[in-house]
Length: 401
Ligand code: ACO
Image 1 (cartoon, rainbow, N blue to C red):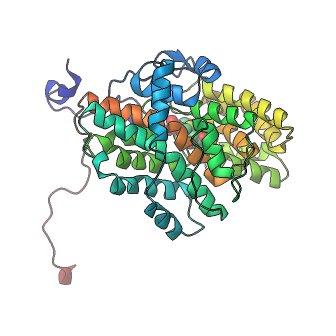
Image 2: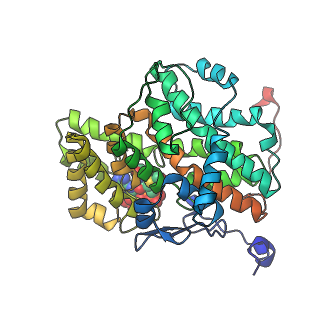
């Protein structure tokens, strides 16, 4: 059966599935996920192996183009991205117009959309060559937008990075260099960020990726589609959970570290509080990314010689949840966001930038899914509904209401 003709084949039957818990929106060859067994693979390669051995740009290439790059392909990809690592100077005026209190996710989403205005040729992309230009453009410019957003909020000058560096090294330097340009690279931080970005790089049809695909399905450009994905990622039930987790752990610490009190709150159906960083729509045994991140958090903190009491609170919550019938019955385990904030914090990244770091990580996934959708010439995304409103009514003039 041709799934693009499903409606005709099923004679117009409409399925209703709020939250799309059981509805597949597409066929995809990018990421394999088995939620029962806790398996995640990018283009067939296990997440453990990829996180251990590859770097972020290799993973981006793998996700977008389907194969691990040769040395030559990798170098060319990086060179093409470097050549696009400048943004129009007028973008600075937009950044300056934001109040200091603006959330970085709102700024990044707006700036990503604004890139379309400065690169109009990125909208109507039909050929693979045009798509490639848009892909390297967004990969080149996004780190600059992120660094400038952070620097504006920190009162630092907005300038460019150092293109002689690796992609991830350059992100750190662009963000943290002093006004005189000084920055001392720390391999522990570079490796940790590289790993975190890889672990976030794709996760099949999650909320933000589905958003990118559905916006892109109307043939809006890549930048507009990614901007929409960033907005979707912002929410605390999705990528915003990493900020929410750290704020929750800090609140528990400030409240005397009583984890049992917060476990009880999370189970109380009259209390809106949820244990942030716990639970997942698809993983029902464990989130394989959380295991790797937990190990990385231990390593990074010990390598940097940091003893963070928040890590003990997080471990305490995890241990209690493992023994708690409420969490066991509902198969609620730490997800990717539970321990990532502890690493970001150790790296000196402020809490409100956590979800922005996630967005840099997810960028290759969004691009790969958008490209796959366009190359497969998928139809416009347009769900149906079951109408439950009033039946036909007669209009009543305002004086008679
Ligand atoms: N704390 C307490 N209870 C929870 C939690 C939690 N974190 N998560 C789910 N539950 C409970 C629900 O109350 C519900 O209980 P019930 O059956 O008694 O009504 C049951 O577990 C199932 O939860 P749903 O919300 O129906 O599951 P869904 O698949 O729709 O939601 C989600 C998944 C959004 C991740 C949810 O677990 C959650 O809100 N977690 C906290 C936020 C979070 O960490 N989000 C990041 C997810 S990873 C990512 O997006 C990158």
